[in-house]
Length: 132
Image (cartoon, rainbow, N blue to C red; front, side, top):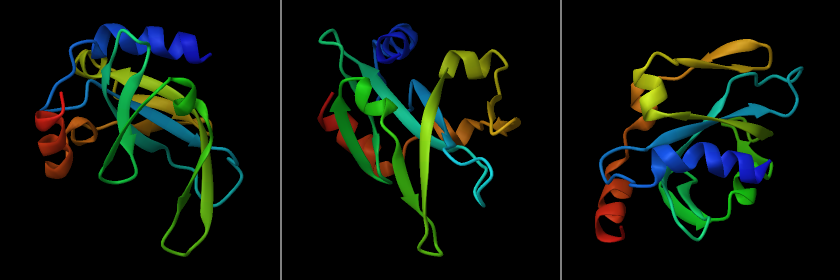
């Protein structure tokens, strides 16, 4: 599954961009019967010939790792202090978004993807400019 995810990201992300994400991963909550039913969006910045991917880590962090790291479930702690585990990423490239793909299915419903999901926070933009 990690191999297939990398192959899906590679054409869209091989060049990278210091201005916007080449794609986003929309993760589903592991428990669709739980309180949280919305997707969690993580930006993808670039793919590399060594089969690694540069992606968003936390709110303002950047990581470079093998695609398997993108498949590992992770928890997001909400304002109420409760952690919601997320998994099962679905990749949407910037080109797919511009071509009309504006949602993915999460917990049986359409989760909207917006243009703002692709644009970088200033700290990440600055980091990617300094570290291509």
